[in-house]
Length: 522
Image 1: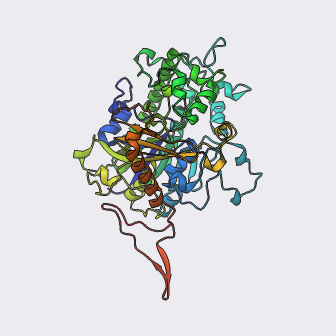
Image 2 (image 1 turned 135 degrees about the vertical axis):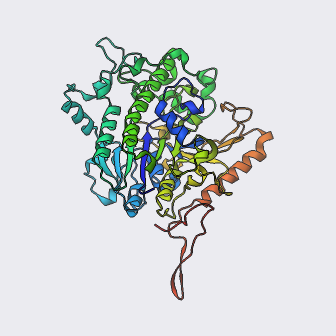
Image 3 (image 1 turned 90 degrees about the horizontal axis):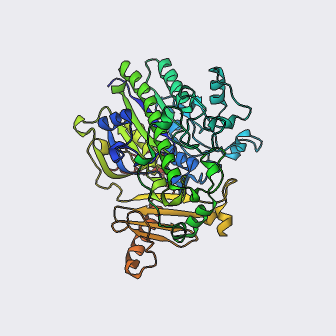
């Protein structure tokens, strides 16, 4: 293969179980289905943290939350960390980015008057933006105006349902934007413009999509493509009180999460939404997914026509999941699987054809994406990286020491739009949790709140907390010890393989895991 290109597709808020290959037979995504047939789908894949900013920091640095410490949206990312954009430049690539990374800059590298500190996030250093969305969606709004769409005085009103009599949050109505003016159409046009402008040099493109992120409103015809009655039923306790009794953090989110965060102009609490409203919202969520799939079809068609498809690694993933009414919640919060389990599909054109179309059950994490791309391009994976390349898994050569559990974290300190830390009376640096989970058990450790322990064989939906059950005391201790060992193993290690000697500086060569490149220092 003469050249190697990489298309990294990062959608926003797409749950893993909303893939046809993983059971969502009601969903129409023929282009993603093609990707699954020609690649490997990882059925046990998680983001290592939520929400957007922290999740994207882990995805693009290969670091766990405990190491990159961009712990919440609006919290800065330390500029010393290597990221995928910077690493690709070392490989001779000019990494292009469409969409966003929700990155707050290191305040030590700029001034407190920097306008990036007035927004939720900006672009991560190292990438070249060829279709920005953040920080203020100005590029998208300008594109709409250039297309002749008349923007309202309050630009946010474009997210309202069509019709002056529309009730805010009425997701059965189409968006006020036609499909050719949607944000999904904008990102796709930017992608095709970039690809058509490329010459013969190898390229890397981070193609981001905002959807199926809220506000949950879809343009026609996608708004009516799915019926509420065809949507999967919700996973939730029999009552709101029963749900809230599981843990103080869950109780906080059930009391405080507002519909306005998900539906423009809506009022009231998420937990009080009716089942019919949730079902309709899920139908709209699916419509937004099919809109993305149709757009990806145009990108894939271009790569086919120009014979670049067989030169291109394609990775499809998301930053995090979405509760979708499960456990009476919306959004990406807490410790439930719905927030953390996300898609990962890897199409490697050099992989043995006999392995394509496989659904792998190996435990994979979002921190694996960066080393996978660098491994495939022949680059060096930074020693600090917490993830591992999945290229051996895609090639059917699973390393003997592959991880035996999933790990993820969540920091719930106060930010300007949510204040669980204050509500629960916790110090800022103790408002956090971490999870270790395998096919049998799930342990949730809180820095300053009671733990949770679930027997997934008997209780896959995680209703019954067994942390204080004497019959499970040994198991709770075992998983707590595993969690501690995991954190110790992944402590920051950028310089720990160097040592001074009477002969001068010595670098210890770190033995590679089977099937991997040697790890090198940053």
